[in-house]
Length: 130
Image (spheres, rainbow, N blue to C red):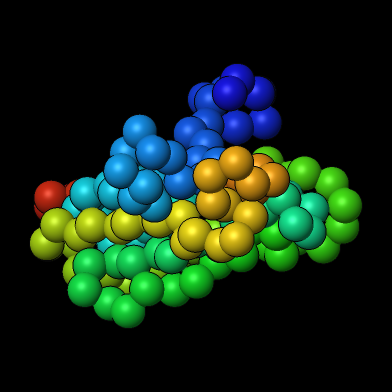
């Protein structure tokens, strides 16, 4: 989907479970080395957003409801869905965002939307500036 409100004008959207992928819940992972990570998404009005599981490395997953990120009846793009700071920048990290199936995300049900607009991370320079 192209929209100038998204980072670089585009986004990846999951709308439900698909027989094409053996009824597995859609997910995306991103590997990085840095001291902070943020997932940017879209806040949808009640009932149109989705429930997502966000897991960083081996930590317990955090649930994010994209219908409740911001109040109101408008769709708001490029919203902070998850953020973690003070990471060890000397090791590689992996963030996984996964759609949590709900009755409305089953095949042939009303569409809920889970957007992966971007992952933004902070790199630490290899050596401090002099």
